[in-house]
Length: 396
Image (cartoon, rainbow, N blue to C red; front, side, top):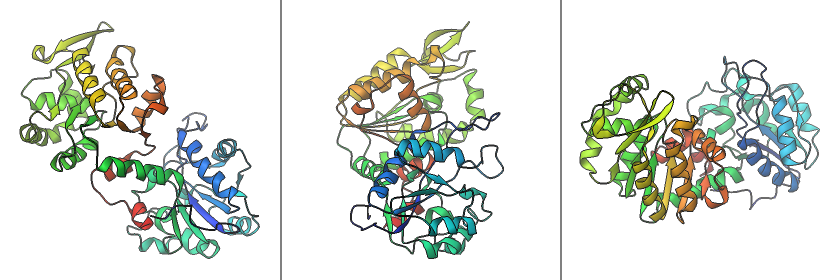
């Protein structure tokens, strides 16, 4: 993998694919700045310092959705984070965009319009096919080098991500840090502890299967919807929570959960007590007291203490998703306890998932005491599950 260290970018037109996708207010269409913008701004600033002519490619939302809007607001946030002007042009690859690129001076940064405004941005399925996409055909003659900085979009074989693969291709700083952290995790120091939480069991099952089969996980701590699924797999009844699992389509993974529990007995831990809400107040129950007419919203204190103890003793930790509905006061305990344990642990830790990052912010967990906080979502899941990401492939 080539990084931006070993190339003379001075005077070169460098296309940089970043991920500026941010939350958008549905009523006002006002963009909320994200951590991704601040992270990518550092890569852009460094390339600007290297006197490159920096052309930024990015997307916002999905075509047809309310948040698929112009990147004009993003340019302001990007400029503020990079501490230098970022010019915005409301064109992706037409004459206006080409003219703006041709007139650039070394060190300047130009943000093109939302690439998802193009009809064929996501049309082609392979890396090679994307060479035929409009943005590649129109802009490739103006491009001297391509920097892929968005690991979070690397799982998409889309034109702006992989279409410029025939140019000299480099990993930006965000991409570089992400891959270095994940490569370090791929040979984890023992004991290794993985925390599988959140509301999407499909995001965890594949990782769990792969990493347990390779002997890389000493303790798989389940919580959130996945923890509830494993409680069910252990032979207990859930009561009202069963409807939640049906809604999340988690029951599709019940046979797999039962197989994993039998095969990796002692390595896969599930909650021994849980928290439900009764009259708006937290009530804890041993799983032996289930089923309950109230839905589960968090792990119990005994489970949280057990999980925290294992995390503190670990040398490698991966956290993917919160332990419960941490947004609600009565259900924040488990997620907070796990994140505080990660903060106190001397282990190298990787934290993934949007809700995990939000919880870190909410509970004021020291980022300096965590190993690496991933900015990716689906790309992280696919990478950890052993799938080859098109964006990573072109870097090789």
